[in-house]
Structures are given as structure tokens and as C-alpha cells.
Picture (cartoon, rainbow, N blue to C red):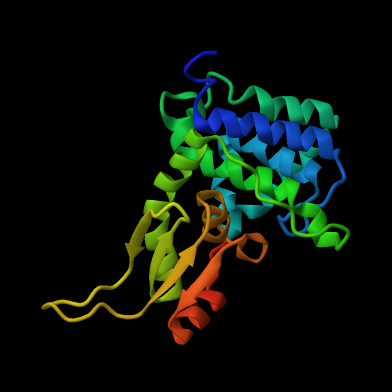
Length: 227
């Protein structure tokens, strides 16, 4: 196995492709309004059509992004899954050294869980057990959470402490000065993968224990953490 194939991002890419393949083209996902076909098309376009990227964040350009995605979605589903599995072409920015790991680890993990946990949207399956993650993947996801924590705190307007059952902790958000006690914080406890799901707007489908100040908890519950 090459070093690229053994990275946490590549590990999750393989799991994502397998999940898409097993689910088939018409399964529900946690991405509102998207089936597995829509999700596979999004993933393929993201790495192959940079002209469609701005529409993901700029509303005025979203029509073009949707048009490109729909064009890919019309392809045979096995071909879409293979595009996801094979990764970006050499001409893609995502093929540059280090970019895949930096930009795709959480993308692959979260969307894999979007597929695996999608049946809950139809009410025909109970909460799925969290996947037992490869230790290298779990550690990499924890690293990604450390920079994401600041965004959670900013959007919730409250300090947050991310914590795992094995004792890792990371705090983000406002702190007091001059030796005074820090302001109340929300404490979020879960495995790294579950915390990542919450951090990317899937908190309703993640096994995370929420503790702390009632007002801070309410602010977190009202915050839009979606990406």
C-alpha cells in the first residue's frame, strides 16, 4: 500500500465509496434532499469541476453548481461511485501533495456517515452504532476538531470544551482576563468521529453528551453548524 493510499483521508474515501456502493443510488442521506446519487455526484464534481466550487458558498452562483451536479448525477451510478473511489485526476487541485488530507478527511468521514445514518431519516432504522474507527483516523479527526472548535464557539456565542472518553480535551472560545474565572462553557463529550459530526451540523445524529451552563447549551442548540 502506498503512503497516499494509507492516509486517514484515503482510508475514509474507501469506506465512503463502499458505503455508496452498498446503499445503491436511491438511498436517503443526512444531506437534506439528497439521495446517495446526489451525494456521489457532488463528491465527483467537487474534485473535477473547480468552476462549480464557488456556488457552494456564493448563493448567486449556486444555480451553475446545481446544474453541473445534476449533469454528473445523470451518469450511471456505478461510474459515479468509481469516480469517488479513484480520487481526483492529476489536474485537480485536490491531487497536490497534502491537499487531499487537509481538505478531504472530514469531507469523506462526514459524508460516509451521511450515507450510513441516512435510513434514520425514513424512520426505518434505530440509531446506528458508531463505527469503530482506525486509530489513525480517530487521531486525525481529533486534530481536525481542534481548529473546528473555534468555529463552533463563534457560531454558538459561547465557549466550548471538546472532550473524549479517553481524556483528551480542547477548549475554544472566550476566556476571562486578569486571573478571573473563565466564562461558562458547553462541554461536549464523545468519540472524535461523533464530535466531528456535531461540528459539521449533524449533532442530532451523533452520540455526544452535552453538559454545562443552560444558556450556553441553548445557544449551541440554536446555532447553525452546517457547512
